[in-house]
Length: 534
Image (cartoon, rainbow, N blue to C red; front, side, top):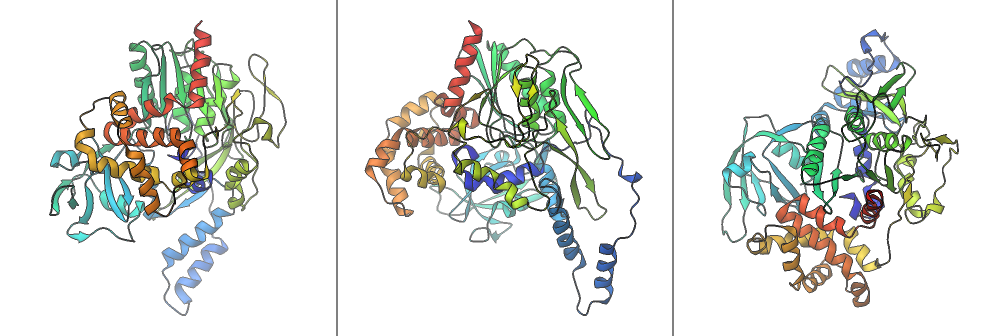
């Protein structure tokens, strides 16, 4: 999760996320361009590739060369247009699909070994007896560990057509020999609502990690469940949500607005102006609402937050969002590859385009903007924020808002560094908290699994002396202990490691309930909603 790692290390991950951000999709809410109307004359690029293919002195893999040319060409456009080779397209598309076909496990790579963090309930792996904590060391009787193991290779290996089989060899704690499991791949649901729970007796908390094919359905189910439990107001957490299908954000916003309210509009050179408006009286239009955003909230997240802000429908709390106001349409090629081409800009109801400035072909500089914000102190102080576009726009109630660089929150909450120390930053940045939590869980899984809710599990963990084990673990990894710094950061260490262990046993719902309890942004959201309830 990006939220718990130093910003420098998440730029690449965010870049991948926003490639799929603000995709138009095929839906009733989005205008699309009919590409068959475009005349495609033979270009110099076509001719050059043909000359190379037919006359170059040595044999050339023309498909590979074409992919390189396409990547280079699209890189000279805006930062969000992207060429996707055939070998990557299925994997990229599956990020927003409702399901994919695989074996049904969540995994983590530690020490060049694939460790199973969780087995998806009802999935193929659970059916044959694979357990959380198992380590995959063989696939189809071939060694599957070592320096060549990475996330992409694991996903390509474990996913596959529904009905096909794969045999895993796993090492299990306490078993002297490799265990073999033959698994028939099946449909695995992709969830975009991480957690939905009551943060007190009347405030519901819903965390949405992306806008995928079924996000709206999951979101409405979560709201309905929380309302049945007594929720009278809601916190919608869009922090670290890098976007997805525009349609899903529009449908979510529709539930909180009145018939005819503008949600978003978009237009481009070949893309006629399209307006999305609320098409009924939203079921939650009178319900108090807070939306949480941060510097990694992008595209569809900004559509939702922008609509709520411009209509004065919700209080936006957190930090300035990423600033992606460009819309892509995916165009397939006959060889199975595709290009996601920027075809329009979108605008919030007040007329804001929140796209941050960019220069064609300078994508590296564009992505470094997040790091520069951190270096300039924007993550910690509202006074450090400098928007290049100072045009004033107005909400329904006449409040001034700005575009040209993300959504500015109504209430700014900077990162709290009170308990941060260099030692804590080092061990978190190197993911030692996550690694230790997994290994601790693996060693004590039987005892930990006796606790059926996060409150009991946290109480149990607080009685264990795992901190000294953690200090030794970090020392073995090359970070020498600094007792003064450790003592100062102890509350942060306890909170994060406990939360990771809870997640390993009870899943995301338990993780977020424990972690958000002490989160400053979430606490401020609760405070605002309680004011509105009085």
